[in-house]
Structures are given as structure tokens and as C-alpha cells.
Length: 229
Length: 184
Image (tube, rainbow over all chains, first blue to last red; front, top):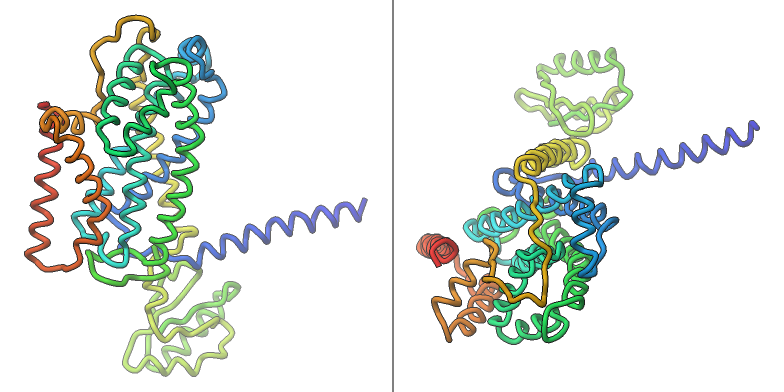
């Protein structure tokens, strides 16, 4: 009994000390005093992405990616599941705000010339993240499988065809056949819940690594505060 | 000069340290270093406090302010700010979701004749551009995205004139996109 208590104490202490070490390490990482104003859009983007992830996981517990079931599961979620309408609305609104925040962040970086050497690749990764955010919005719109979503998807795929080289390929792949149907919904769903989240997570990690490495830009000047972000 | 105090330093030893600093003809003022307690030494030739290195309340004597002026630590200061921001965003989302809940239209039917295309706000500028340029839309789209990704590699020199041009170009592009989004 006494031995077990000692073991429990050791385990608790071990866990506690690891948390303590982690927090101590975080305490040594500094956030640059230049992190203010519109720079906070980056934090907003990260928080909104996490909210999207959390609400998306909850929605996927009920969602059934099949034309006969998708619409009905969402009706069930909206009307019967407790708080289901809130989760779905919060997911939709977080997506809108996320796109607005990404555009604001991009505008801020552009007008401050924060993409200047050595931060060129931060801009490139940021651009890819903008495209991924647009793709998130676009693929998510079809998932309810309602009339408006279908018309939006048709218009979007049509528009995608005007993008040279990759556009027609992506459009054909997303449609999953000559016409829209079960394949389209399945591919939109896979892109929305599997491909894009992993891509965005990896690109965000790389973007964050570059920001940490180069520090915050001070209006297009070379160099920066390495080690602070 | 910064005196970093030991975490377990008692009030008595800290008071003793302040007295010792005063005895050197210097004064102290509290400084938030983000990790614990710290005192900034004020007065002429503050390096005289280096003699207090072995004092019971002193953890470390920093000769530069830079390490402390490097910004606030991620834990706990920045984490607290992020938590507050997260709560504010959650509150905003709850309000938006409550007042403007996401709707659900009629069930889609792929066999029914397709209705007029519906375009969401973020796709409208691209659709407007396509309608405006007609057969050149494909080339224009390609050029736009090539220029977009290559821009940091092209814009190498920083002069006031180029900065102004950059702002004019950015402003013009935003205006064009807005016009295309709402007029086209």
C-alpha cells in the first residue's frame, strides 16, 4: 500500500515536472514587442483554424457523405441534435471570418513589404495557405448537398477551368466524372476533411518555423529579431 | 543593470539587498521580467552593484537590458492574451451563429435542370474578371498567380518611390477586386 502511494507520488511528480519543464521552456521563448496591431490577425487565423477543426470534428460525427444521406443528416443535426445548429453555424461563420482574417493578414504583409528578403518563402507559403482557405470554403459549401450548394459548386468548378494547367485537372478530379453526383460529394468531403486539414497544418507549421527563424519584419528591412516571433 | 531575484528570496533579504544598493548611492525600481521578480538599478555608475553578486537574494546580475526587452514570454503572458482572444472570438461566433444561423436550402437533385449559378462572395472577383476579359481570362489568371507568388523575388529594392508605387498598386488591385465583386 505504502509502495503504491510512493509510486503514485513519483508518477504525479514526474508528470508535474514535465509540465513544469515545458512551461519553463515556453517562458524562455519571447514574443517580439513588434507583435501588435494587424499582426494579431495571425493569432486570429490560428485560433479560428482550431475552432474550425473542433467544430468540424463534431459535425463529422453525424455527417454521412452520400447524396441520399448528407442532406438528411444535416437536417437531423439542425433540428434534433442538441446544439447541432450552433455547431454548424459556428463552423460556417468561423470559415467566413477565417477567410477575412487571411486576406487582412495578406494585405498587411503586402503593404508593410514584410515579404522582403529573407522572407520570400513566408509569402509563398502564405499564398498557398490563402488558396487552401479558399478551397476549404468552396469544398465545404457542397457538403450539405442542398440546391444552393450544388449551384455554387457548379459555378466554382466552371471557374476553376479557367485556371491554366492545374485548373481543368483539379476540376475533373473534384467532379469525379462527367456529371456531379455521389463521386463529387465523396471527393469534396475527402478534400475538405482529410487533404486540406493536413496540408494546412503542415504549411502553417512551416510558415511558423520560418517566422520564428527570421523574426518579425520591421517594414521590409533586412534581418530581424531571430528567436522572437 | 538588472538584479534578478531568487525565486525563494524572502522579503527580508530583498529589503536587505535594497538597503545595500542604497548604501552604494544607487536606487532600485521594480521591473517585470516575465519570469519572476527583478530590480532595475538606477543612478550614476550602476555597475557598482556587481559587488553584490554573492548576496542571498540575488540570482543573477544582468548588465544589459536587452534580454528583458526582447518581448513578453509565451508563458504565461502571451498565452493569457491568446486565451482572452479565443474567448472573444468564441463569443463573436456565438452571437453571429445565434442571429444569423447557417441555413439549409432544398435538397439538391442532380437530375433536375440546373438553376442559375450561385457564386459566393470570395469567388465573385474571379468571375467578374473572367466575364470582363473573355478569351484572355485564362492568360490573365495565369499571369496574376505567377506574379503573386514571384512578387517577393521581383521586388528587391526598397525606395520611397517604390513604396508609394506599391501602395498605389495594392490600392488599385483592391478597388478593382471590389468593383468586380459587387458590380460584375
